[in-house]
Amino acid sequence: MTERPRVSMTLLAIVVLPNFLCVCNAIESPQYSVVHSESDFDIRLYRETSWMSAPVKDISFEKATRNGFHRLFQYIQGANLNFSRIAMTAPVLTSIVPGAGPLHSSAYFVSFYLPTKFQTTPPTPLPELGLEPYTWDSHYVAVRKFSGFARDTNIVQEAEKLATSLSRSPWANSTSEESSYAYSIAQYSSPFRVIGRVNEVWVDVNPSGLGGYKYSEIATS
Image (cartoon, rainbow, N blue to C red; front, side, top):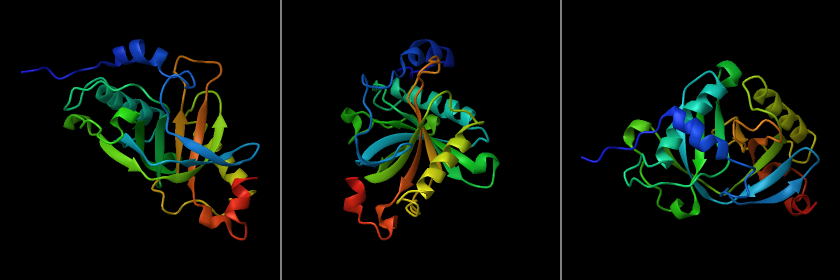
């Protein structure tokens, strides 16, 4: 019987993470158009895309991201029913599900963007990984960049800064009620990169909440 691929956390750290992301021209990322830009945030329109997600229940954003990414890494290294190797992409996206627990959350989804080769037919993950394929419909996202490490101690503050910026813009009433997530943290840099790290806060928005503004005017401003 063929032995299923196993990947240790040691290999994860030594082999992949140093080469993980270098803000990220060398690897695939989901495609988008910038439809509105301010000094401290952008509104992007993302195309429909397919992702593989790891649901995690944990009170810590950092622990949840490590747990979810470890499972996703095993998947892309061949822990799937096709034994397919899948190229790394960016960003690693940790979505926070709203709730009453610490960090105003009760659960997380750590998600991996599937490369173009696997967008329509992603390999089925091994059941023990507990992964879920997810199709993300075309949608608008408000994005705020921040540097340094994404930590339990700073992600809420970064999300609040984005909410404040949105509240002072034509997009003040545009937060999407259809979203299952409070917000998401997109990470583009290797854990070993200290200088020039790139992270983003993502919040789904809906142009129908623009009130008296014409969307065509906002999009071209």
